[in-house]
Length: 87
Image (cartoon, rainbow, N blue to C red; front, side, top):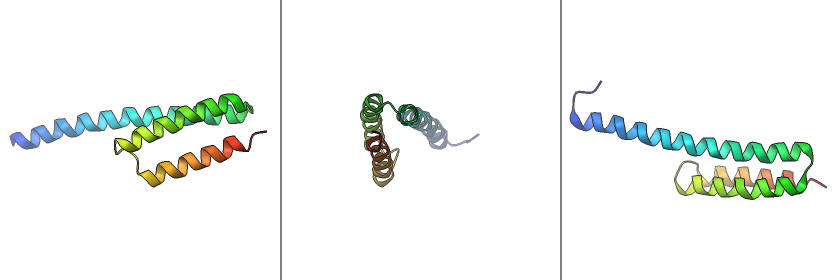
């Protein structure tokens, strides 16, 4: 454990940020899994609804600085293509 007061604070702050980031990443992964599940079932309406939610979650994560904008753009592009391929 750190001895200096500022180092102790840094540990607490970084832990708090890590927990917040983990929570947001988890929400994003869940949203993406719902899109993938709808695609696997072949349900276009459900896939489109899930895609809208997933894109929203990804954009929020980008604004908070958790994901890089190009990473999110790639994920959104791939999900959208997969949903559009459904009949």
